[in-house]
Length: 161
Figure 1 (tube, rainbow, N blue to C red):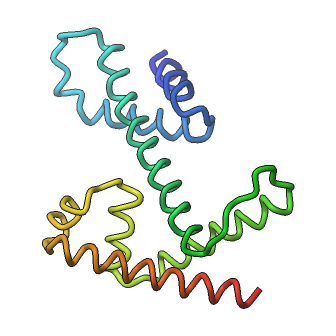
Figure 2 (figure 1 turned 120 degrees about the vertical axis):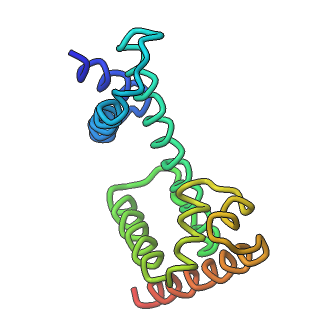
């Protein structure tokens, strides 16, 4: 019963069946983990909806962060997706996205962390500095260096094709 309610809420927020399935599963696991914190101040379903909503919000934040990263990297490469993409263009963009992820994974740990925290977790520079235990200036330098390394790696990929 609750699984269906959670899935329907997740689907209505995320508008993607596969992602809603994952979010529903994450929400139910989180609810089981937090069951001892349920105080009965609201109905169990309301409490479960709140958990589901928070899980979905997190996924939406991650989605927006991935989109921002893609936009930044496309700007670095000076390429924009076509307005009306044909199947071959869609395939090329998927391949480009895969190349971006490979390039990000190739960064050393401190640069990859800066990119991930900024663009996937949507953290401000001050927050990244606090998490990493460095100054904001260091975070800016790491992001700048990471952007440059990603641009070089992706330019090399483009030159090979």
